[in-house]
Each structure stands twice: as C-alpha cells, then as structure tokens.
Image (cartoon, rainbow, N blue to C red; front, side, top):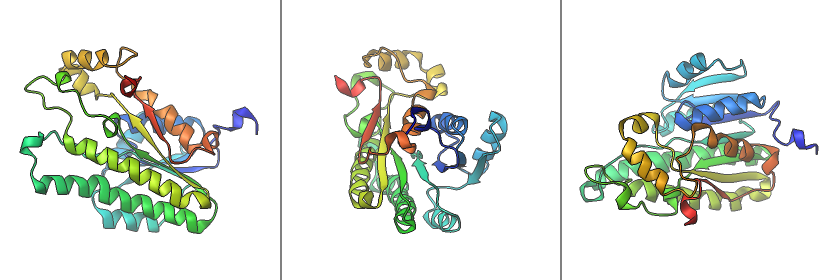
Length: 258
C-alpha cells in the first residue's frame, strides 16, 4: 500500500458524534480535508450551524441528535446505512464536588455518559459485525480515566475535575477494550483517544492563572491546541491504524508520563 493512501479517506463514510464540539469541530475539518463523507452529529441546530460557518465541502452533512435520548439515537442509527467508521466524542459536563454529589446526579450522569453511549456504540458495532466488512470505532476517554486530578491545580473556589468524570472515562476504557476483543475477529476495531488538558477557549479567557497551572504540569509546558486531537482521530479511523485494536491513544503532552 502506498504511504499516501494510508490516510486517504476517499469513499469512506464517517459519523462523528459531538462533531460540533470544541474538539469535534477540528476533527470534522481534517476528515473533510482527507475526502471522507462526514456526518457531523450534535445537539439540535448545533451541527448545521457549525457546518454553515466553517465553509466545509458538500461531503459534510449535519444531523441533530441528543445522545442522552437513547431511543431516538438508536432509531436514527437503524434508519441509515452504517458508516465505515464512527467516533463518539460527546461527554456530559458536571462540576459537582464529590461531597455534594447525590446518587440521583451520579446515576443521571452515568446514564448519559455510559449507558446511552454503550447502546449507541453497540448498535453501530454489532451492525458492522453483521454487515461483514469491518469498521473502526473510536471512543472518547481522558487523561483522567487513568490518573486522578491534582488538587493543587484547582485552588478554591474552583472545584477539582469531578470524580464522576474520571469514573466514566475509566469505564469507557474498559468498554473499549471489551468491544475490541469481542468484535476483533470480525475486523471491527474499537479504540479510544484520551485528550488532556484541552480547556475550552472560554475557560482560557476567564481563568488564565488556572491555564498556567495546567501547563506547568505538562512535560511539554503548554495545554493542548484544538487541532491536536484531530490527527489521532484521523489515524484511528483510517487504514493507517488497520492493526490497532483495543488501544487508548493518549494525547496529553505527557501529562500521564510523570
């Protein structure tokens, strides 16, 4: 195989759940540049607004879905031809401190971030198995699926990264490995990408001191830039990673290497 064709996504259909989010946007742009047929999936109106403003090619289309509404997501998946690959980048956000976390909030958070995710990934992955032509699935983990947050990076009144966020990401790592083993014989690969730290621009603008503390904990001495997850996603969704399965690809500037 020619090296130039390893990342060529011409003729491949890819679904990007959370494609209009901060990290998802750049992934959609890169996949479009690699000639993929991309479906950018996000909350109602969000994907279409991003596509319209970003000047993407006609290969990129939008879809409105709330991943927390499992029945609607499954109905949408079943009504379409399955893609060659899919990335699941949605993550519910909560800054609730551990001492204030109620059982109800924890259950709801996990329902959206784990149960709904599992149902969607299983629907796509099992469909790929039954189709018989393989595929690539990428889940979204985090550095905090491997290590705990350092409280010193979050001085009061800022709450540390939430306990239930890390719990969810650690569970996603295991779900990814399990699916990789079960579907591997059918050439359906399942991997994860673990970003961090990639604070949103609004957070960067409002909390420059916090950003400096995060950067000081990274061996590279800086936070991640928006485009720096896109390459990892393109790799995992392309033939360049055709023998990569059950792997959590960490994109954290070395945060977890200390």
